[in-house]
Image (tube, rainbow, N blue to C red; front, side, top):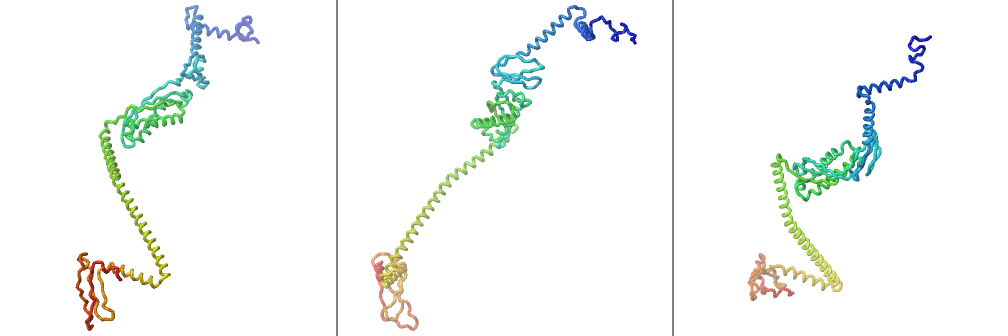
Length: 373
């Protein structure tokens, strides 16, 4: 069965002797449309369009040429994925959007200025101006470590400065001698946190350029400074008092210690002397007991009566009578002049006793009779 179409029995509606295919027809159709859009009235539209395309392609390919400086590193990515890091020199890469080369200067030193407000350990509120100088040491970490490395640097630096200055005193912040230590600790703390985050930034220096006290807290700050000064004055007064009292107390303690040592030596020497004397007496008693007993008795009596100021003298043996009282304390009080006789007042005899016929007259003369037995 032959279909009722132009061209006889060919089902595609074409003459068998035609050599063009359907694809050729479509290409020619779109070419005619492009020529019509560019310049319908010009016969040279096709050549101009081709030239424009060639120029655009040349410019696109030319944008792939690059040159990396001595202080730079070129990070090449293809469709956002890292390819390599290229050093100094010129080269070519596939242009955007296929490949992208990002240059990072790893030698240049940049700076970032901060203005944090910090409360010190002695309750002082200060406005700081801090300058942080840094270098992009690692290009890969700098580009891919954190989303915004420089913003991260500012936040980390402000936090570290608040922590370091907040632990110090206002005098350390205001004075020039305390600033180097504060900035050194702040630099170390900033670098440690940036390394922890993998930011690829190296801190070269941290400078505390200005310190100001806010106007709203000047009066309160003045009172706080006065209280601090009063406290320091009291401390100085206490230390001055301690410097005068402590040496005196130490000297008194040393004197007491020396007296104790002297007393100890004296007591020990006396004890040793008594022990030696007892040993000698024991040896003498072993040789002559009777003589030694008599001598010890006499020496003991001599010692006792030598310290006494009253003496009782017995009458003659075998004769009854009263005891005689000698007021030696009054006699001694007359002085050590020429010897004089003292009246002897006999004590009243007991009731019913006979008066003694004779009594012994005693003459007291200084120290003449001491030591006689």
